[in-house]
Image (cartoon, rainbow over all chains, first blue to last red; front, side):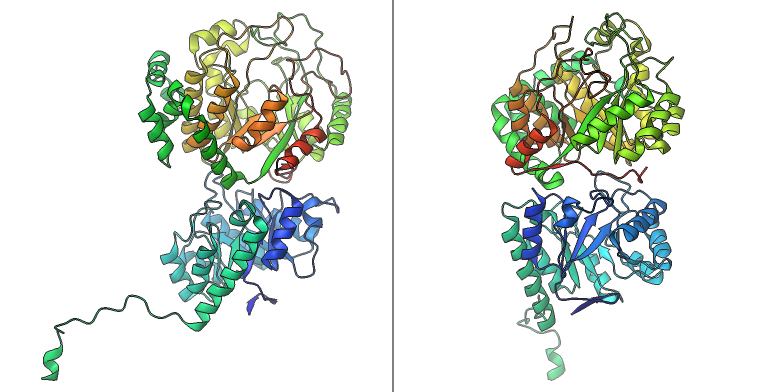
Length: 254
Length: 370
């Protein structure tokens, strides 16, 4: 079972709330996904309105809210947004998203490191969205991050695990859970991420924008389970070298 | 500091126009097949040669828009603060030489308008004025922003171009987005349509987005007034401008609008008419050229047209708009800047969007983010 900070998760599929055709559709899809951690953009919800359309559709005991800071451009704004989220949504969990680049939404590593350090000191459970940068992951560990969320490909691109070689390095040396976030376009991408040992994946666009979000959410649920089972069962080694017909070392047997 | 002027000067209107009109079906097909499209591809997509490929363009445009923006349409509404104006513009109802009662809303009147807009459900407001620097200046804008900021998650402004220092001053007051349309990139024609007032300075307007970028304004809107000049050539220059700005001011977001000249009392006939089919071609061409840019459609367009373009690449729209200062509550009968076409209420538009399997989004920003 997956543990982040002091919370245990049965599902390793985390989800998002954007891009759905309605809040009702979102609710149905998230229920079908079995997800227990759902990220919500602070800028999309009205935290002063207890009838907020998104939030009212997420009121289930098994669903934990993960507010995110999407829209902020630096550490200072991120810390401020996190504090607002903590007060309004009564959770000290925060998905740290600092992307000053609104075109590709690339995360700023320097501001993210600064904000993680400050927020961890303030008692937040910080899950930072980052590039698949192994050194940055170690630096985030040093300052108290609860997990790391490296991207598979640009947000919303559905391109799959373009960063797989770096994800493998990150997974092999991480002391905190690794959640592959962004770019996962198909259940097979999610299964692959789980097979290489990711602790969880976060999927939004691929579910929200599909022709049938509920069915797609279920497909992701199964794919994530299958990928995890394969990882635990240990995959057979790939690409064993063919046995040469004239072995170079056969003279040793003479 | 270098500005878009330096790029703009390297292009001639005539050569650009010729290049667009000489594009062939081969160019269009290449532009459809590639995934990263260049300005040359954009020219092909807005050219007459692309007309037979409209359905294909629409299919790609829809898929790209869904991937990036999802099944949502962002909602905003204009709030006209003033129709005082020192400019003469041949196409505008607020032109200095137009005989209309001039009005600039007082703080109390603004709050009456705000109450009416909030009642409609809006959280994103677009402040609009003419250009009357003696009354509607940076200090006035500051006061307005201070007044309305607690009531809106997102504040945009479409007013006269300001100096860099003004934008820097206004930003901390909650100014998030600035729209400044060039009207036309045809320099000689621009002079004809803007014979008097500060607006007649083509280059100052052209460099406004540079100043917005330097001031760190989050989002800026570009566009031309369709009908003044050949829309294809004007749209190429808009795309050129967008391309330049995106690379230089990479921390800003961009949106494009395509206002078609609308009738107003004593108004100008469009020099070049653009059909609905051509407007769809332009919308799709922008989306194929730039997957991330926001595309906005106002109440200038007809009900049927707006209903149908929602799925083709548009990402934001207004509804229930009034284009006169005081139009919502204070003075509903005063003269409009232009006649709107889609007169449905915000609620009706919300329902229409939902019926198409999309969601109208009223809040997608927060006034704590500057």
